[in-house]
Length: 358
Image (cartoon, rainbow, N blue to C red; front, top):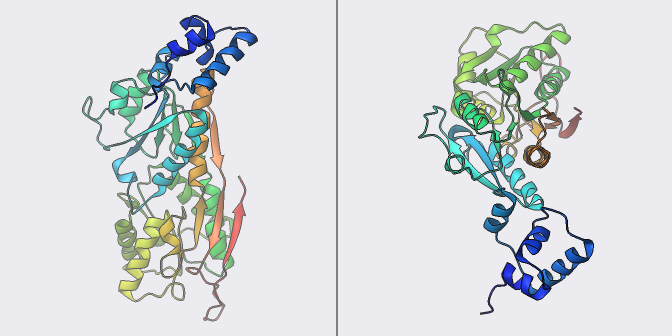
């Protein structure tokens, strides 16, 4: 097996000192163009590949970006944040960064809950996706490690964030239901302290008001613990066990909408003939349900890519500017909504895509 070339081999063949070769390879100081081209030519001739550890020692950078998400936000059943993580993976490669993934519990306990890459100071920056313990964020901030948030904000601390245009997405969803003839429109949600869920609920109410429809407390549920399928089914059950029944429901996310579909099948409620239903996120399962789910599409991989781009910029420039980037959404109309004809009866469902500009 051919021996792997070292930096000493490059220096010897180029007739230059180790420090000069290191300077050129790591782009860490001035070298004449002639010297730089000479080193790069020898590097190519010897097929020399500097190890990340060696480059890290020279640049004082690890070459790693941490990705933190809570346990309950990272699952096969609700792969929203999984797709965001994949977006960071793809974007990190051209920037020559590795993404180190870890999940954390909602109850932060120092030092047990501190990710290893933070204890070892083995990351140049951190991306936090979704709701995360404030104490952990405080800990990272004290380490003076750059942070970019995805799909979350902290009221008492300001960090650059990549956010969903939740209110416009909610507006598109409710507008679609009103256009298809519905007035008794419900909302099911949970963890209303999450900024995205709160914004979707606000967009729901605002759109009803715009059309002269007063939001009816009997038709909305916002106090479920989280936005899982189980709580989607539970929230739908609570509404239908009440005194007023909706003709349509806007769910805070697709997981809750899928739970609503499960409940409807158990109760003998036909979707969309008896109940029109819209979700939010456009996770993979939404298109495979029966009926396929009308939903608001979130460009999850793009959110991950934008987070990496912002974090790399902060790492390189040491910028202290706070930048909030809002990612637009699209209304995807499938078979879970149906136009209601006055006097009863229904029309055929429409299948289309409607862009909602940011």
